[in-house]
Image (cartoon, rainbow, N blue to C red; front, side):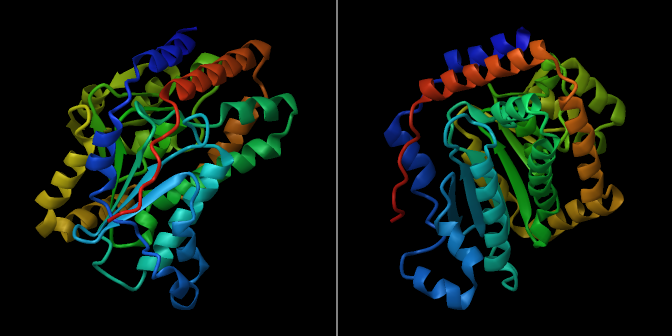
Amino acid sequence: MALLEYSESVAARVRLPRPVTYQQKIITPAPAILSPAEIPLIDRKEGADVRRLSELDQLEVNFDEADGALWAFMRPDGRPSYNLALLDDIHALQRGIVAKFTGEPGKLRYLIAGSRTPGVFSLGGDLDLFATSIRQRNRQALIDYGQSCVRVLHRFHNALDLPIVTIGLAQGDALGGGLESLLSFNVIIAERGAKFGFPEIMFGLFPGMGAYSLVARRTTAVFAEKMMLSGKSFTADEMREIGLVHIVAEPGQGIAAAREYMQRNQGHHGAIRGVFAAGREVNPLSLDELDRIVHIWADACLELGDRDLKIMQRLVSAQDKLRARTGPLAPLRAAS
């Protein structure tokens, strides 16, 4: 029950930031990606995919033209995990970015992904959906969910095929699928106090949506297996020592660290982008590989017993308590 105890402890240690500080430090500096005046022109100019960028329900999207940086923060409805609607918004985000910035070299230089849930980047997959699908013996529902996740991951891993550098910003815990998604970014910034790991082994499962592929490429296959089979959680500093986190920031300083990284590397963007692109050539990651692993994961799901499913459901309850403790997210405010 170590995993359950850990999940429940997350809720106990979350401290909400003061609303005024939250708005001033995070929302105000990043103008909205679309002004109201632009919206009527979008269908003629760039298509419906770009229009969706102003209509996402569970993502907050802002564009900082000075840095050429697009900031995308998850605002999940309910538990801080990848529900189907959030996944749909992320797919729409990816399509919209490609539609808006393709053919405009240099306008978009960085994509930064984070979360507005205090203390949490993401707790990963939708465990409630998993448990329901397993009880119904619905293998296809599990495969469909997994394939949706790996398509999101694969596009981010390839920087959306745009000349950009991607930054994953973990201001809180990234567990299971949350860590898988975080590892798909070029540069990972983590705040001290955040925890990272793959706890799925506690309920008889393994992370099947990119964990092995990404960790093995960044470290070794031996370490990837050890990390997944141990269920151990790691600190931000430990993750940096392993080579899975690039920058460790003090609590509350993750956004500042991302800005400092971009400003420090203004003159090296092309070289940095080139290094990451070369890395993808040396260690290519195919969508077919990810899909085949999703099938292995779905089969493993269907082997889970009642005890495993009970643990999974108790984790869902712990995540619900976490969401209830953090309360509603701060409302969006129009950029000045």
